[in-house]
Image 1 (cartoon, rainbow, N blue to C red):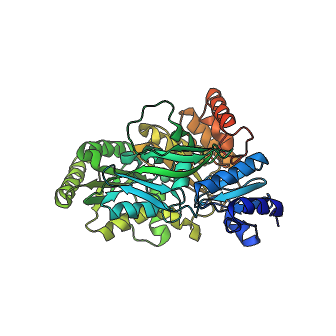
Image 2 (cartoon, rainbow, N blue to C red):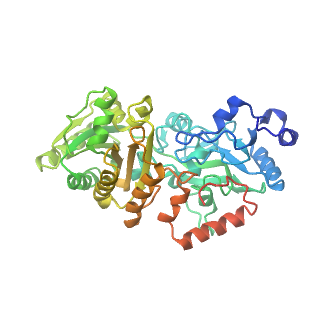
Image 3 (cartoon, rainbow, N blue to C red):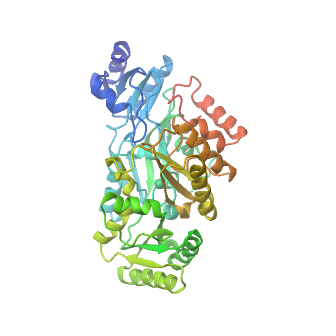
Length: 465
Ligand code: ZN
């Protein structure tokens, strides 16, 4: 086994034996993969640290820094880019025992939590206080807030509430040498120099470990309206988006586009009856959140009816109950069911360009795939209002190397000055493609920051930069 008895003994002496685990086969299996990346088991994981306090994290990092031992911070291990997967000899630090809700401040509309609290727990705590935590994605039950911030998670409501980094008021984090940086403030306005909390958000544990956070909460919606519209093409998608933005204003919370290939896979491909017939050029799921169930539903239906009269929407279904709304979201959330074998294994892309260019970009990616590898199956979907396109290529029906497919897609994205990772992060998976989206000067600045904060390079080596 890869465990290192001296390191386990040293860390046990510092933190207490019950907060450090030696590595056995079952544990190694758990800590060497996320939702997309199955890492090698022979990389040499010395120990798993399970801190209960910020002081534990500080002591563990201080020890590892002193002995130049690499550290891999882990949350719920639900990432999609390998950010939490060890790729070399290292100590893993899992935040799962730091799961206290420290405070919910109704007047400030904030919640302060430890990094290991699950996203869903934050959502439920906010709900119980008649407030709303908007960050939401498929892994809500398992993913942890520390991981959500470290990867700057996105999800389905970014268009209204922003990415994870937009929901954070304060952060407490521990640097590589064990120094605790306490930026745990609840104020919105704080113009006091460099915004240190943002250094840790999206850094995927390469600059330190987030231990506590203050998150923004919003008023709880009294109404949610959901529907799916069928349109002819991407031009109609853009016209519908314009009408949705005007008609719903700040009540618009989701505008999710599914290309026909995705829609077919997410309905009949999974044995589900399509809410609207197959055969349209694109399908759009629109969600609004408001303050009055009756007025908001009427407005929703009238905006859609006007878009139908204008010939933009060809067919539509509007949910009349929460159950119907959930059924519509199930189609959009169907990627969570692909692993049952219908579209698995898959290679996922998470790219972004300005919203107006998403349609052409989808066409260009489709063209590159079809020209070079006509037998490859791919489906397209995305958070179009955020300029975010997901493409999923089924890998089991051909032998095209992943790297060739990735380069081909990212070169198309780079020509439009897009991002090779809109919301999933870089991790180990996209590290070699970072240069498609970041200039040499930007990469040099990122390295300078990394070297200043982690001079020995112990924090999550091989990830991001
Ligand atoms: Zn997404």
